[in-house]
Length: 433
Image (tube, rainbow, N blue to C red; front, top):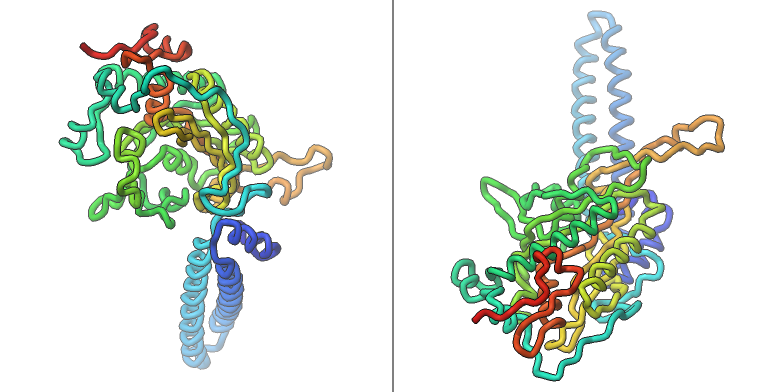
C-alpha cells in the first residue's frame, strides 16, 4: 500500500509510476476521490458523535419532566450517528479498494515498459563452449540418475519430479553452500511455514493480478501455499515495532515453494526449469527506507558471489516497471547462460519493496532521535514503516545451469570447487552404469 500522504501531496508522481508500469493512471484520481469522500464522511461522523456526547450530558442534567422528550431526541441522534459511522466505514473500505489498484511507486531510473524493456547492466563470465554436442540438463540428469520426471508425473502429475541420488545431494549441497554464505553475512537462518493466512499473502502483494499462480486450500482451512519464503518472512513481524538501532534485520528462509504456473501451458515443459514445487533459500531484510537501496545492491552482490563461485556465466538486468510485481519498486534479475537453449535464464531475483509491504502488514520502527537537538520531539520519535527487501540465494533451478555448464562429453559433470566441500569432496558426477 502506498503512503496516503504521498498520494495527496504528489499525485503526479504516482500517476507517472502507474503509467511506467503500463497501468491506468485513472486509478490515481479514483483513489484521491475516494480519500476525499472518506475524510468528509469521517468528519461528519465525528461531528455527530461530539454532538451526541454533549447532548448526553444535557439529558443527564435535565429536569425530570423534560427528560422524556430529550431521550427521544437522543435516540434520533444515536440513529444518525450510527448511520454516519456506517457511511464512514464504507468510505474507508472504498479507499482501501482504490489503493489496492495502485502498485508500489517505482524508483527513479527504473526502465519503463514491459518484460522486453529491461536494461542489461553487466555480463560476467564466459559462456561455455564444447567440442561435442552438449546435452540438456534433463538428459544429463537421467544419465546421472539424478532427475526422474516420469515417476514425478506418475505420482503427482505434470511439472513434478523426483531428485534422486546425486540429484538430491546436489540440491542440498547448493542450499547448504548458500546458507553458509548467508551466515557469514549476518543472516539469521529460518525454516518457515509453507502455509499462510490470507492476510499475510495479501499483505505481501501476492493476491493481486497473479493470484492465479497461488495454490489455495479453501473450505475449512482458507490457507495459501507460498511460492517463496518471502511471504512468511514478511509476515513474521506483522503488527510489530521492530528494533533497527543495531542495523537491518536479515533473515535467510529455507522452504519448499509451490507455484501453479498458470498461463505457462506449453512453456519449458521439459525438465525442471518451470515446475510446481521446488526448494529455495530466500534472503529477507527489514531496514530503514534510507538504507534500502544500498541494502538492495548488497543482496545483488551476494547473489553474484554465489554464481561466480559456481563458475556460471550470467548477466544482471534492471527489470522494467511493467514486469515488476505489485510490491516491488525496483527489481534486479540475474540470468545464467543455459548452453542448450542458447539463452540467459533467470536464476535469481532481488526486489526492493520500500515501505509497500510494511504498510499493509503494519511493521514499523522508531527512528533514533536527532542528537543535534536538546531533546527528542514527538515527531522525531514517532514510529515509521520499515522497508523490506528480498532476494534468492539458491534454488532448485540452479541445477539446470550447473549441469549444462560443467558437463563433459561422456555425460559426467565437473563439480565447481566451491561446491565440493558440500558433496563430501566429490569432484566429478559420474554417469550411472
